[in-house]
Image 1 (cartoon, helix red, strand yellow):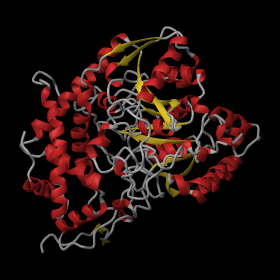
Image 2 (cartoon, each protein chain N blue to C red):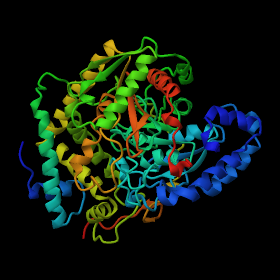
Image 3 (tube, rainbow over the protein chains, first blue to last red):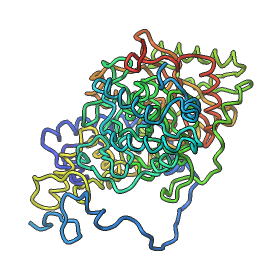
Image 4 (cartoon, rainbow over the protein chains, first blue to last red):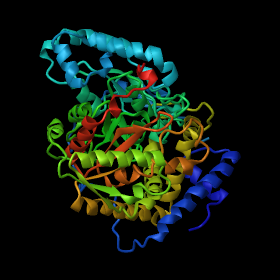
Length: 96
Length: 489
């Protein structure tokens, strides 16, 4: 496993939709590097024949009936929104 | 004697006999909050007006009260949504979330029992932390000594019970977030089996690990509170559809012949001597009660913290994508276009630890690294789960310390994420395996800070935990001690 670079940190921040300052790039590179380095401990273990655990209980796909039912009203759904108009959430323009 | 010294059963009787009223209990909570919460800082939002009005209504109905939770003041960790009552997860990104649209299933279930919600409790932001220092508000302090942390992430929930601000509280536990603060604050905290309590309305941190659980002063109260919040919930697809026993029945059984396993990894180097001594004394108590114990091994314990941080951060990075400044929460004013708005809202709204974990998780899930980190951690999770299953083939319970040390000082570990993470080394394996675990008070160190004993059982065997914990509690008086801020003379 490789070291994590500043460019990788910038790329990951973009994927995570976080705006980070150059100063944060410095600290994040250091701290993520340390954590990743620590996680390499897991490579001591041979896991070739081990199944991954995604879920501890033996649950298969849990389905519900696909039928409409009453939930919250549109007005309620909008009342915590930072901005809305004509019954819809409003966001800044997608194109500059 | 204060009203806070009574058990739920005793309170139920006193309410019935009109020796006490719900209003008096609710007043006692708000009086104590007024007296000590300036120091403890357990509450983020109070529900005072509604709680006092509800108390008056309930006082008209005491004759019909048929459960031990009726009229009892409770605190709820601020990552469970409460209809119309501000829910922040102790994060700036939800600072203005004043009007949630529905109640979490646990909150709804407790409302049916007629508990009274006093307010919302402080925590590490989005439940990420072990000290409450990651709250974006002022961090909760340990009621036993306010120079020390209360633990986390459910630090407010544990401190509020220890400081007698409420009679019980709800916490959530992803890697130790109920048990570790319960240990640090000298109260009883249970992380139930994954899937036993509905997560609907719990703001998700790591969905395959999160569980809601009760924090109380006694084991008996804990059984009553768990009874009220368990059960299958169609609104949570990971909720287990299992038969629910009567947990109070388990309190009647003794521990004669009980087979206890003590993992050697939980008592080796790195575990504080005073903690070891307290745990060994507890094992002596069990011997005297007719149980036997043997040393066992959970050989993959040392890999748990690394696997946990990869898995929980990966899940968190996906779960926290919903905080984008569109539908609720705080939106940044400093943005020109939509992507920019997402980025600035999130960067201004999230604290450092949350950003660090989102970054770690995004990295571990990103193209080219998924197999090396995320999938590897899932495989190690299997090995850790197998360790527990193997021990439970031969033993009834696992006992060890809850934490390597008692509470540490505010500021002591805050600058080094890895040192902070190591604090959860004894609680994390339990979440990875999905089994239930409880912390109960088992002594104090030289500075008078509480020490927690951890009791772990197999999947859905909470009754075994209650039985084991109750026997110890009856034989000792650690749970009767209380901090100066909780009214000790």
